[in-house]
Every structure is written in structure tokens, then in C-alpha cells.
Amino acid sequence: MVKVAVLDYGIGNLRSAQKAFEILGAEAHLTADKELVLGSDGVVLPGVGNFGKCAKALTDSGVRELALLAVENDLPFLGICVGMQLLYEISDESPNAEGLGLLTGKVKLLENAPRIPQMQWNQIQVEGDSPLLRGLEDEWFYFVHSYAAEQNHLQNITIATCTYGSSVIAAVQKGSLYGTQFHPEKSGKAGQLLLQNFLKICERTV
Amino acid sequence: MTNVRIIPCLDVTDGRVVKGTNFVDLKDAGDPVELASKYDQEGADEIVFLDITASSDRRETVFELVRRCAEEIFIPFTIGGGIRSVDDARKILREGAEKISVNTAAVQRAELISEIAAEFGTQCVVLAIDAKQSANPQCTSGYEVYVHGGRTPTGLDVVEWAQRGEEYGAGEILLTSMGRDGTKDGFDCLLTSKVSQSTNVPTIASGGVGTLDHFSQGVLEGKADALLAASVFHYGELTIRDVKNYLIECGIPVRPA
Image (spheres, rainbow over the protein chains, first blue to last red):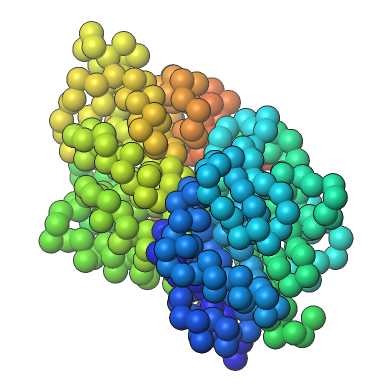
């Protein structure tokens, strides 16, 4: 059975991500325990709400160090929503807060958005051939966010975009590090397929 | 334009779904989780549960509902009714709800909105407003905010309250027309457009939908970002797929069912 650690740092709705993996047959732990996290096949960093608040909770809970260790150990790692934003260095939402700095660049307010936050289902345009998004071309996912990763033409890590006023980065991959701005755990069947793809990545069967 | 969300609403009391006309004459329409799961399969974009008889001794039933939903529903769901503190919100969000909605408690103490928003983010705070046409001169939009399940007028103007709610940190407005609720006469598009156009956060239109035309009117005339319905879905008069196919025909963007 694939073992997934969903990092518990006391932020909002973490249960949904854990449940979603369990339903797909994985052993999913909501945890901040070092052995459990480093002994798992993959790690998930969910996140909702304010970037600064989440960044502070990461530090206070000790999960920041754990997340960095997991990535250093090359464990497949998936950041969801603010969890993806935290992979970057900084965010305009909380200029004094530090992200994990695993990805170069920053997170900034959505531009030309009809409404902020983007709170809707939106269709993604897949770029390249990431194992995370196999079979998910043009699928619909649930987005809730006001900020998004800035386009960075120096590092080509975007694996999907969506259109919301302008083009928005919807998912990224750098090696075994993945991020989705949308919520796969709340995106019905398409979301389940994405999480299944992540489990395959964890099993190293892709 | 945003992609319009179709949201079935389940009024729950004692763990069962009920839906009344003008907030009285409740009628049983089944198990909430079973029904919500069916809507998820059919292509609903979100689900709203309103515990209309929430009181402190009934909170455990609500938590039980959230736990069951978290295991069976794979789309966002909102829990409303009887949320009076950050602690209430925390427990519900922690168990797997995406959002909570506040109504009476927020009118009594608007800081509740900012407290929950500061803790969990604005995206999870839905301000539910029960609105009724009013001749009260304080209500310059012509609509007054009611609380306690629609029993108590507050003297607050609906548009002003929606704007204040947004300032306090509400991420969304769930706007129910009390005059239309349960009537199947269509959404109150005037009310909806007034609120939608004077706030920046999404507005969910609620109350009165009965036909396919009403759904498109809610978007085109009411300028709603999301449409909420209860009885037309619960009693099988329309399916989510019917509604979405119709909206697509009207050129309104939705996630196909």
C-alpha cells in the first residue's frame, strides 16, 4: 500500500486531502511526525487562507524543516493551493513572510481578474507531458485563490495554466516537486484521477 | 464572466433534509449525505448545508454530518447554521468542510467575520443574508436584512450590509430572497444585481428558482456568480445536467455536467 504523509500544521481543512487519498486505497497520515513523514512514499502540503499565516504555522509546527527534508530526500512532494504557493520564495500577500524557496520567484495578486478571489471551476490547459496530469487535458478543477505564481520564463516548470482574465499558472513540476493552484481533493472525478497519478508517482510506477 | 456554479442547497434539521415554503411547512426530503453524493455524481459544483435548527445541543449532529460528507463528497461543501465563534468554525473546517456560512451571529457581531477570515482565510467565510423588500427608510436599496431564520427584521440595508460584510472579510455572499423562497417565481434579479454590482466578492443567488429560464435570468439579469436551488432538485423536477445543458445553450459558461 502506498504511504502518503499529509503534513499537519494546524491549517484549516486538511482532512479532505487525507480522506481523498484513503478513498483511493492509500495509507494516508495527517502528521507532523518526522519518522512517519520521511518513511512515507510521498508527501502532501495542503494549505488554505493567508500565505503569511500558513508560512508562520509551517515554522511554528516544525513542518517547514520537515518539508525541506522530504524534498531533499527526493520524496514526491505535492503542494496544494497555498501549499503550492509556499513552494516559492515570497508572496505579495504577506511581503514579510518566507516561503520554502524550493521554486524561484514569487506569488502575486491575480491580474485582470473578473472577480477576486477566483472561486470557481475552471478548465486547465496542459503543457508538456507531466505524469501528474496524464489523462487530464482540458479537465475542470476547483479553484479558490486571490494570488498565483508569477510567470517566470527562466524556469520552465509550468505544466498547466487556466484562463481567468489572463493566463494563470495552474500547476507546476520541478523534478519530483509538484504544485497545483487548484484543489484536486475537491475537484470530483478529475481531482481523483490527479491524486491517483500522484500515487503512481509515489509508487515509482511511472 | 466567471464560470457559473450550480449549488444544490440542503436544509437540514436533526440530520434530515427538509425544505419549506417561505421558511415554514417543512417537508422531509431524505438523507443529506446520500442526496449530496447524488448531486456530486450529477455534476453539482458545490453543496450548501444549512442546519436550520442549529442550537448548542445539536452541534454534534452537525459535526457528524461534516465527517460523513468528507468521506463521500468530492466537491466543496459549505456548512451554515448556528456558527457563533471561531471555535465552531474551526471544528467544522477541520473535519472537512470547505466553507462555513454565518448569518445571525454576524449581524449581532460583525467581528465574527473578520475573526474567522483572519484565522482561516476569507475564502471560507460565506456571509448569508436573508433579504426582504422593505419600506423602512433606512433601507435605501429597498431591501432589509432579516435574521433568526427570517423571523426578525434588523433595520439594516441589504446592500450596505453586504458591503460591510465584504470589508470585514466575507469571501462570498449567499443572498436569499425571502419573498421568493419556495415560490418558484424565479430569483429576485433586482435584489441580486444590486448586491452583485456593489460588491467585489461572488454573489450566490438564492430563493425562488422553479424553471430553466429562472437559472439563466439569475446570471444575465441578476449578475449572479452562482445559483442555489433546493426543491427543484430535491423533488426531481430538474436535474443538474438539465440546468447546465440549458445554460450552455444560453452561452453561459459552466463546468459541463
